[in-house]
Amino acid sequence: MTEDAPETSANGKRLRLEVVVASPPTRKCTATLKIMEEMTRLFPDQVRLDVYALGGSMRVIPTRSCLAELKTWTVPSVYVNGKPVTKKAVPDREEVERKIREELAKGPEAWED
Image (cartoon, rainbow, N blue to C red; front, top):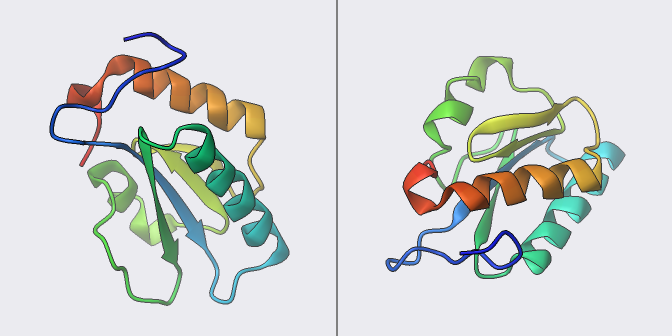
């Protein structure tokens, strides 16, 4: 596995990217979603994007680490493998990509479900 082309595990596990947004989304939330959707196109078979709208119902259960911060969620917030990248701000695209590459390099056994 290389940093440029890490693979998913044999069972298809993907690195989780999580975004907390307002409902309806603010301009910052929309800008954040755009960056995170770009990350899913950059790493198409390696990541999955879960979006949680404050005040809405969750369609998936957040990662353990992200869920632990539920009572203090702010919008917009970005988590990579359950680790916060930004809170209350639009993330820096390069910083998000760097964090994703770091977590992908660890391999699927280090990724939260």
